[in-house]
Image (cartoon, rainbow, N blue to C red; front, side, top):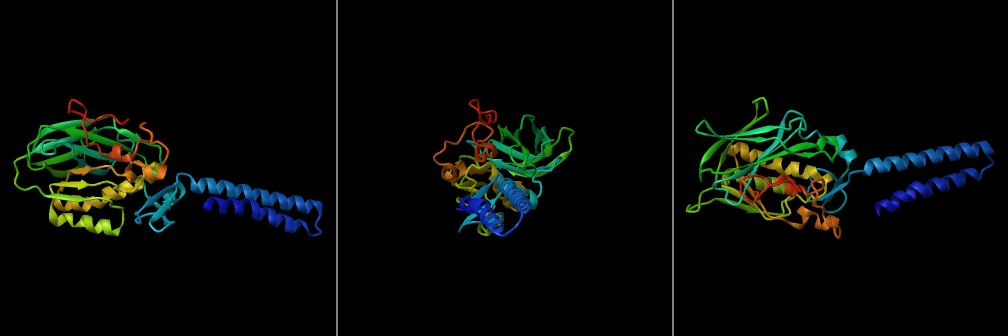
Length: 313
């Protein structure tokens, strides 16, 4: 409907104006000038609409950002995001740090960090009682540069195994020079024989005030693990909706700061995570360039030997 209206504005209105204007007793030169002006305006509108709608994202239940276009739908474009959003991952910074759970989160963990593009090497240092027990180098991050400049980043993930259940560790994320960029605690989940495991479960979050309020309750609940049942950020596998994941990770940061530790997250897949609704009946490509960010950002399965992060493809 929006496209039809735009075409009417672009084509019909200039035509009617031209017809009305040239009906008067103006000279041929005047008609040529009027036609040239209208043609220029027509081309300018066309160019503006192309630029203004490039990289469109329509994201549901994410009223934290975007222009409301339906009851629960919010739209943004490359143009609006460049005008109103700040750069997510600055060149020499880690903008997100979080943990996802592999098969046995009592003895292993995926640590994930998003950084600016110049930071193509990060070192994840895990300590116990001030003694370094793991030193993992991420030197081949996933380079996400097929969105506008403010959303571009490197995505680092490492798998650390052989940990002790229900044990407190300290995590440092360093650059290649050894400078500490992020530092926070981490606690593995209780083991198989534990009598109590505190699990926070939810799903269909959406990035809105209600989700933010519910997430804040985790500060007092102090979960060992978080399980999300799908439709996490409603990005529908659209790369242009990347910012919905940024809102999601930022929503958990106050919880991590309050607890002074990361909490591992388990995520199941929903249709709005892989683009069923937005892209149906188009098959979602499995190439790394347009793989849904659900998989790019949140590793939960290791390679067959159980010792590494699987490649993104």
